[in-house]
Image (tube, rainbow, N blue to C red):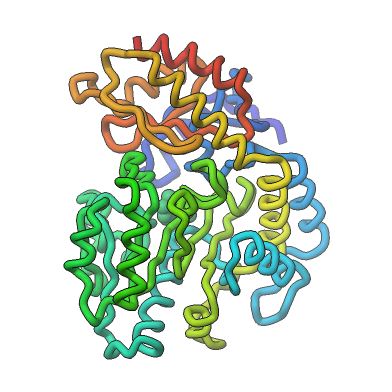
Length: 402
Ligand SMILES: *Cc1c(COP(=O)(O)O)cnc(C)c1O
């Protein structure tokens, strides 16, 4: 369907009829392919957000779109009351790829986090022997795990919480990157440690080397589940399939989402072995759309292209190149450049006046970025980006940061 609305019309409609729970850049996208998107006026931009890493495989990847169309013509939804011919093969594929025994499918990232929380609590009572309603989960300042009431209840971002209480008890918030604080906080009632391997929304915060390894040791020694939220960091973003692999550890529960849907459909879930996944019995937990054949068919293609087309390796190789070139820019505004793979935060000095205005300037140059927190520009393009496209972007970033 071709639209006859102008960009200004579309923005006006969205503002008039949509809830104002976002403050987007005023670019109205109507077409996309790979790392590029086009606005309604035909202006082309390089997408440096990749839908918060939900589009790691690039926009409208032909193999993913083909899987989507093919499955859309066959069957899209059965609910879990019946079986479908996509769920089993998809679970096998992701379990073999990630080396876990089982997968539990949900839709959004927040639902998968909720699933992990429920798994940890029930594991606590049924396996560890914690008294009912006493299980505690350790979480970290600056975390982002989604927007449900339980999850925002342990956010440290005032705006995420303000007005939405009362909140779910049972979470203890600790400083991020400080393993000694975790060691001191674990009690016999602790059932889980819920951690992002790199804090994405928190500002691309990379914890000290060895942090996850130490959490793994503590979790094992004190009989606590190590739950790693790989919703944004996973599926190639940091140059490994999962960010925890940089530390050579294996979590008890891995939470995935975002790029699992290949930028087409919401699909998320948790990976775990039988000791944890075995706590769920029929009726304990579920989702009407969770494990639907359309999403599973898309996810199968999304994982396949990620691996077969070398996107994880591309993220490692070009991420390193990009970071090195960014560090050579020597802008007076830049305080620190950090990240892993194609997940880079450019933190500006507070005097620079905030990252938002730089994102708006980059938009004028044909580069779409989103600030994270006030002072950090996040650079996270689809993992199919080429060196030439990075060079194209670098020229523009250099100009804006000069
Ligand atoms: C985006 C994100 C979530 C929430 O995912 P939704 O699909 O938006 O619910 C949870 N954890 C992390 C680390 C994320 O980046």
